Image (cartoon, rainbow, N blue to C red; front, side):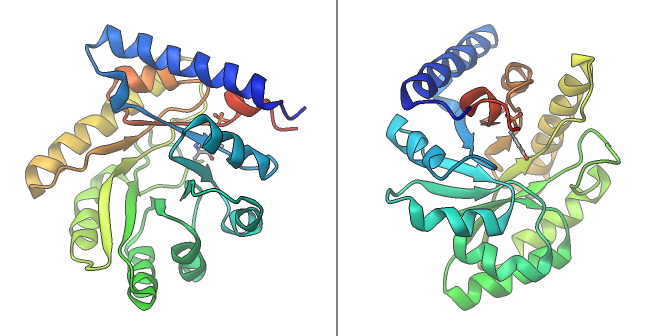
Length: 231
Ligand SMILES: *Cc1c(COP(=O)(O)O)cnc(C)c1O
């Protein structure tokens, strides 16, 4: 059942505490880890909760779902696209999202650049990398990341904030930990090689957020731990 605001707030406080504990273990400042509330499949009120709690942004994985919810939300919370984007929806995505995290091909880069230019805006993006080499996941291959980044940096209407990944579904926590370490190393290598900060590392979800923070995540994307299971 969709929670009351009070119970959402308790859950959010608990997650903030989990993030703080993980940060302490590795000497990080908890304010360097953002909590992104993933509102997919939940009512539009989920975004209002996030805003009331003081979060900057929510994540949605389908363009159409966000387009339907946005008019029902009166606040100024930002919307980030975290799900796979087909290039024929690039224009709609560039119109309705403040950042697109799921950029994984040059074709998509080209379409987003055209769309952002037509809108007269600079669109922040993340490059989604399949750091866990999971055949069931979208995201560019690790080996293709340099080429994709070079192409992205050449776009005048896109701003590359960093990288995003989704760990493979696995019972062994070493799989997620390894995936996050891989993304972190890739970011460090690319940042040095291209001379760009790539500050954002979007990694970690309800089930693996502590491991992600230990590995350097700057944004955990959390849905079910905030709003309850999706049925
Ligand atoms: C759904 C989703 C999340 C949140 O997953 P939870 O397990 O509900 O926390 C995070 N990232 C992406 C890309 C998602 O699609």
